[in-house]
Amino acid sequence: MAQRSKESHTLFLLAVGLLAWLVPGAGHFLLNQKKRAAIIFITIVVTFCIGLYVGSIGVIDPVGAKPWYVAQIMNSPAIVVLERLSTAGSYPVYGRANEIGQIYTSITGLLNLLCIVNAVYVAHLRGSETTGG
Amino acid sequence: MFAAAALITATFTTPERIGTDPQSVLWLLPLAAAIAVVYKATKVSKIKAIAFARESVVLFGSIIIFMATTALVLFALAWLIVE
Image 1 (tube, rainbow over the protein chains, first blue to last red):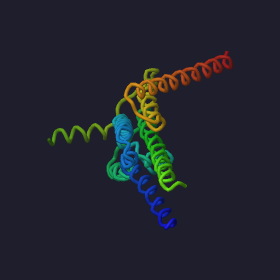
Image 2: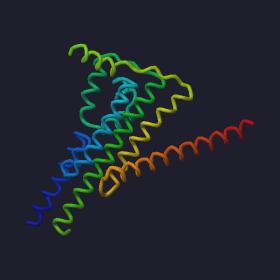
Image 3: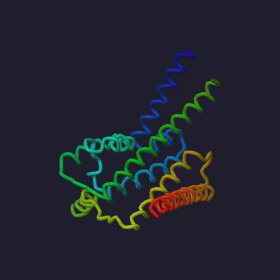
Image 4: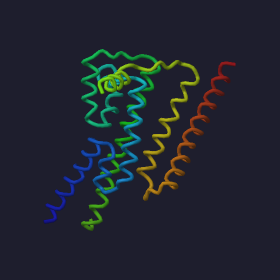
């Protein structure tokens, strides 16, 4: 019985983490923290869009800027779609616009990673309180 | 509808022209604001509009003051080495 409870708790943590990665703020939404989820979603999406506006989708470059791409992918798996678009077309971007675009999109990815970890941690704390562990 | 879609696509497929002048450092401000807001959203126990805004503004100010201080120290160091 305890084993099953532990398994379902782990599955719930995985679901929260995965959902938080799929859509920024969705992890907190699942935990019924709607205000927090809305703030996270709006801030991350707007900041990411500013980055794309400044540098264009050319800043998502898994070949020439791999470390930046690793941080960008933390935003959402939807980055893969943008990456396909970016590599399919020709969107060269250089100089300060490239730097600022990459910094904005990567920092939002790292902020979302912080939110994913926070959502999983809060879910874990709630689970521990419920099971008394 | 098509024109709107084309405009949106063009907005995100053409980079902006940003020079390397000192004003380009101002691009730091929206990013620092976003960091302050998201960080505080994960830290505060209960979100109440005024308290949350105040805490975010304090963190935003702290980031800016710390970065300005760091820039001044680095500038002074560079000046001492060069002169």
